[in-house]
Length: 351
Length: 272
Image (cartoon, rainbow over all chains, first blue to last red; front, top):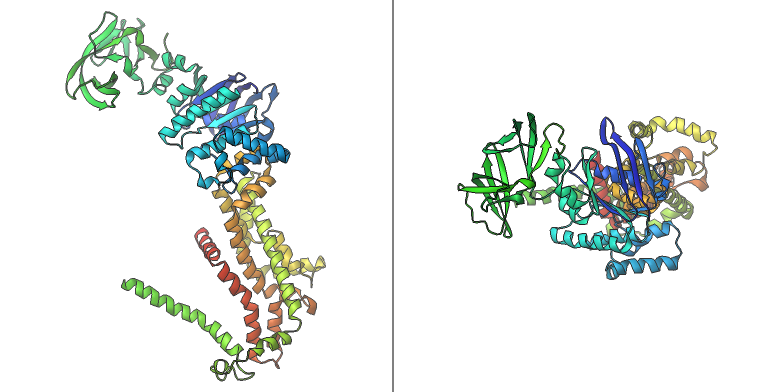
């Protein structure tokens, strides 16, 4: 086990900068999730740590060793790939044994470790099968096993669950969390799925266009997104982001008019999470107004209702069956304490 | 339905056309000495299987000829499979400066007809003292001398997911190990294709042995067959019987490896 340190890492493919001056430290035993939209550079960052991509500048440290000049194999880390990357011509047992064979582990110990790893992942009955005869979940388990068996200092996960169906994804997510609790190996996990990030990460690092937007505990990031991008990316359904102008202490967007956080004239973005919009009678601390319903999605445990707000749309997530119909006018209320303010130009949070 | 019928008839006609020379070869090879061409039914009415034994005797040292040919063929197959796949792997997976330019050069050599390089190549082998040895027949294959096969292997390796290489690198494998333990076993269909094409090419090769092999003990089957033509005292029946024997392994290999062979042809056709 070891800590991981990235200092001012920059990666360019031709003219295009994929990672710009990125720094991150992961403590020994920590589980950090890199999350961001596709093309944000999160996989590239993982591959820089793995040694599969050479950064143009910057430092990578694992434990107290600087590793950026080392070959992937010398870094003592294991990686789980999105498409599993199992060797198709080798059986499950041979797949698990391959990294040990390369390290010239004696036969008896190798067989013992293959057996133990297979048992811990419920693969004992599948050892003689080839990957082609396994289900997606089983293949991912073998891939986990091949990473585990080497007892590496660092685990890297590159979107390991995105090829699985929703149910399996949940199961494997729990399995990976348990695995980390058991082994306490420092882990870096890449995903584009914000709910995966929120549930798995000890900390999450939100990446956009090659830069970190915010790094923090999942619920802190959810409660106080540092930028407009994070606000829109983390949380499902996504936060309502309403751009408007603050003038003379008032902020107006559509029919909505409320006290602005600043007296200056300034272009701002107001953020409201859908679950903070309520249909109940307004209280004193609330913003309240009547809006027309334009769209209703009933999901069983909740109902997503869209309201027209000038030229924008305000979405509300209401508990259970909200019994609203398209075309109705409804009074909604939003607690003032749940409002998020961002600068329209820089995208940064105001408070 | 009628289109299918038409296809079948057309294919049947083509099959007969292609089968005719073989039938002719077999029928004449069985005919009594001197009568095969005059009377095509002679071989059927009154077959002389001993023609085959006599033909092999007239070839002179059939065992030696067969062993020579087999040696050259097997060495070519091993050489071709090994070196072309190595080169293909490097072109597909190892980044180095000037790789694509070098690959273009390799492909460009396909444009040169063998006849153009025959004389310079002969001079090279003569300098190396390899004339009248199997060296000139085998060395070019061991030196990756089949750009088209290099190309086939490269395309095949490019189609393998790069994550397999990356996983192996993280597992601690170097390029050579990845090539040997991962890429090559996965390239089995390509290896079979190259092996069969090389077999047919080397087994039937007449031109290269004709240029380089002079002494009797080094002759290959194709050279011995051609020897029949030059000697006026050997009847056509024996020549065709010997041809049938020389041809037999090719036909056999074709039937055994028909599927692989057709797949190879398809790959070759689609990649061109």
